[in-house]
Image (cartoon, rainbow, N blue to C red; front, side, top):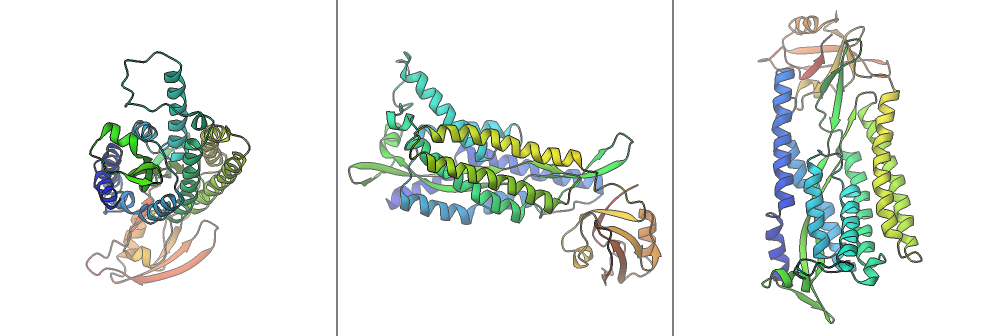
Length: 392
């Protein structure tokens, strides 16, 4: 069992889905930095935080989930794992929008159901029987295979809600769009994306049919193998008319409702064998509705991040700078700097030069409340306090 565990762990890092996800993350990270440098003269976030999030965000919950699945004993099949990896890689072609298991797990399960249905009822004798394993009658009815996948999916939904609420607004990289009147507006594409390493139990005969060297272990009269599956978890939505934290909270609440209904469907499978199949269809539709509801909220509200009438609008805060120390926020409007009224970016930098070691600001937040804030600034860079400003 120990040998199987470590072999599965080593092979985790060379699986196509993990490698493709990592390449996609690296590409996204460098593309974001280049965009920030070309549009704001400096990258808001110089670090490749996307890569760090991809590798680290899922470690804790991956360990918890792996322990639970191993202790409880919730196996899945190799054919489903192969189909999932293909579906997840194809989903990345469309960006992060549909890479969440909400979609990929559900689609993979429905494809497996359809493939098994066709293979069991048609003449495909030319296909080696080691390439697929026809579903048993109990699996076709929804248990245990589809019920197991559905339970894992509910677990991933719960940890996704927690992770998105906690991390989605930590790194906001601004983009621009123009209204019909030609006014420049700031928007924030939010793309949380990480890999969840989940240790799964797979029937041993599936592996030995394809990989005779793969070690297995026995539980009673059955043989099983460990398999570390990289599960890609992500979402993609844009905020331009709401406070990012509030928009994320609303999206998370919609996902909580979806998870609650999914849990009811899972419980109903005790009496309704086909409940998990219905659940997969429901989650695909429900996930699409959640994203649509967010988009609808954005379209119905006024633009929050447009140019300020009096002062200059902050649309980005660089970490580790005086602006962060002064607790400036995206959406704040700087009205005064060093006791001088501010109307343009040029006014702002001229006021900063009035005092090369200290900065005193009057700021109006999104609720219209005024506050004063001040801090020391870098003596070697008196014109740089770490804010990105929306030009009028």
